[in-house]
Amino acid sequence: MALEPAPAASCPQLDLKTSLDECMEALNLFLSNRFSDSLECLRPRIRESMYHALVHATVLGMQAMMTFQHDDLVRAGQTMKEAQEICQRFRRKSPLLGSLVTKSGSDAFTEEQVHAEVCYAECLLQRAALTFLQDENMVNFIKGGIKVRTSYLIYRELNNVIRSRDFRHGESHRHLQGGVALGVGAFNLTLSLFPPRILKLLEFAGFSGDKDYGLSRLQEGAASPNLRSLLCTMLLLCYYTFLTFILGTGDGGVEEAEGLLRPYPRLLPQASLLSFQSAIFLFFAGRIEEIRGNINEAIRRFEEGCAVQQAWKQLHHMGYWELMWCFAYQAVWKVAYFYADLLSQESRWSKAMYVYMKAAFLSMLPPEEPRPLGEQEADLFRRVSSLKQKIAGKSPPTEKFAVRKARRYKAKEPVGLPVPALEMMYMWNGFSVLGKQPKLTETILGILVEAEQKLQAPQANEYLQDDSSLVQLLKGMCLKHLGQSGRAEECFTAVQRSEKRIRYDHYLVPNALLELSLLQARQGRTREALGGLRRAKDNYKNYSMESRTLFRIHAALSKMEVAQQEDNGLDASASS
Image (cartoon, rainbow, N blue to C red):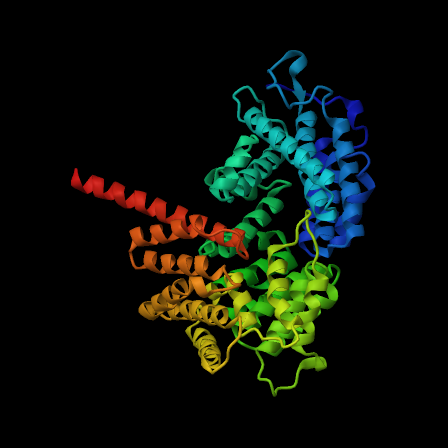
């Protein structure tokens, strides 16, 4: 494919290279916490430059997603729509989608027109995300889905074009390549994460996803000095420090994440990672330390991330959430409550969850201990259901779980939750962090033993078996991390034996099967582990947080099946 010189009339004031250079400078300002300066740098050109319009809309979109204010989401969506219209002006009248271009004649694209295609696809994808967040209307949900599919098809076509032998690299090819790497990598990685039964439906609709290919394309985009390298890096950091951790087997990818952060200090005034002052990357540096179990170091990083900038309070909220859990791991319940309280006052993302966590942390205190601000956990639990919200037409699973658990406190004679903070910690896979610090794990185990003893006292209520099974599951997690595998297995097995007597918390049995299988896999009992995982996947439906459990089962199955294939290959080689 030949690239023709861009007609001078198409962008009279700003050529493509200058536009990209100015946008790179704006992103450096953004990374240096100068968010307003970044937007001011972009704003004068948003009516004439597709890249200025796209980056400006992207920054506002990120801010709106963090504030989660409806008006902010609507404004960001409108700004992205305007950016899409600017990109449309630079596209060829007969667009790329639907026919691979040839290397000469009327089918040839200018360099500027190919860049317009990738910018247009990026606008579509971001508009879809904003649409899902701002409105639960089914018509808008369908419109968002159409945008996603169109974006996916454009990226797929572009990927074929720029990798063809006939494609000639323009002056700004690295930025074009980075844009395609971002889109193709994000789609492949995201689609690959879905459990097989959902993936089959998506494949029927024309989507496909390859995790390794998606990661390689995002790494390619992150490694090159291009306009999308920051977004590629952030997606990979989210994957390695959140998705693989919360929806996986708890391993995370800390080495990969740290490798992604390493180049960035050289772009900023400070020269070392320890003095790295980008609030965004300080947050991820804290997350890396948290996954490693270095809780005090993680707290330091999160606090630094909050201190280095005051312009975007939304970045503080991300830090508060992690600080809340760090102090919960240390069983410092009042400080954990403090951060949950800050979130409940300042953040709109999930007020039901924040208030539930406030109540959960207070309930971990001794009954005689004074409560901060005079608040009582029972009153807070009763408020949770009134704060539930909808995202993309559905309530988030964590909020539905919190509402269901808090419902107990609306009874005339409420039965308290035994260890609600530890139960929610499990839901976020926090025991994988806790387990890296034996002293902290022993402290939590002591709390669970005490809760177990209270449940053994003469009392009859409809929740007794559910509560006892929950304590057994969490005890098993502590014992597993303390190396007491036999006792841990007994706990997980006890939950399974109680299956028919559990009345409400049906999620406990498939999760106990999952944890037992992970324990067996660690002991080399692969066949038993695979059998348990398949039973957990196939035999249990419609329980709380089912999708999160299925993601974890899928991740564990994939990991074990690959290991089994490798072992079989080694055995075959040895026998030959």
